[in-house]
Length: 203
Image (cartoon, rainbow, N blue to C red):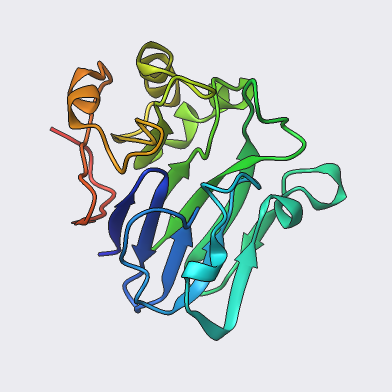
């Protein structure tokens, strides 16, 4: 099974069955020791794009919001061997949809919505039909969604597991706030914790 390692804030690492390593929004915490095959950046703010933290393999693919939105559309990337990355809409009061994205990653048959920094988007209305396995939501509430809007988005997206991140500016995590999030199928992952990802329905 693929694995997700949560570094803290909005940063996490995904490891495929074959050992390929994908980093999403590198910035916080540790766990950058595995050389990257893919680095994904949702937007240009400093707390999401510290790519220099990541050791890159020779043929590492770095995909930022610039590549994701090239040509004025949300692009998809087929990275071979069961790994695909699809850019999707992201927006909030500090993030123009022309300068930021989320990603839907498919790895080893597991689908994961990596929302980046966003509030509710129109495109979320189409996600439930895709029966996503995981959705990761930013719940800081300052410029992106807060706990109430995040719970609404989780219900709208309808993923089998919903993971809260980006909970408190300047901190890796806020467990008290995560515990208060009233979302269905909530899955709390602490910084420095690694979980196995699967595509089985929750009980």
